[in-house]
Image (tube, helix red, strand yellow):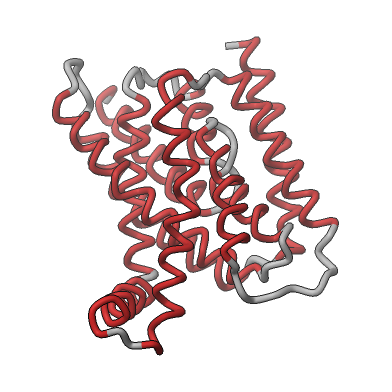
Length: 270
């Protein structure tokens, strides 16, 4: 019975990862919070995060498969065949690469020194909420559809702070685009495609560390969490694209405040 309950806990964490990776509410912050609430021994939390991240990565890769194929094909045509009609897509790929440089550098430099306690997660979630509230307050502006080189770099600088547990990667990336008056759907596409680029090394590193970890891990639990992460990431991104508008971000902001306050409170209770 205890083993069954433990498996259910991993399934729940996988579902939470899948949903919160897509919505602007921080997947790492939620996994930290719920691992405490469920009293789970996730001494290898970073490995668990990377493996469940792989589920979200595959879900987004499936959802954006046509975009990825088109961008890769166009880049090939421009580089090899010098087709000028493919230049814009090739430049878009370069902008995506520019946007992931800051978070890549930051992750390599400080990932081993980042706090992941409930107190820091709580304050980080409140910061995420503040950013979403700001975007909501300036929602009635003239949006633009193009992402310039400068826009890509600034989005990348915003995304860099997502290395902190509790700072939503999708939330802060959306904020970086929306404060530059880029239309939400364009920001979402850019945000999730840049996530795919970041997730390739993260996924490979997670698999490597899982194979070489010296402590015991709950293999069945990790696999089920990975599967749930894939399914619920796919469902969430479909929902996000269909229903979420800038005016809806206030609800995510309120939610982040509630969860942030809960995390801070539990830090002194648990």
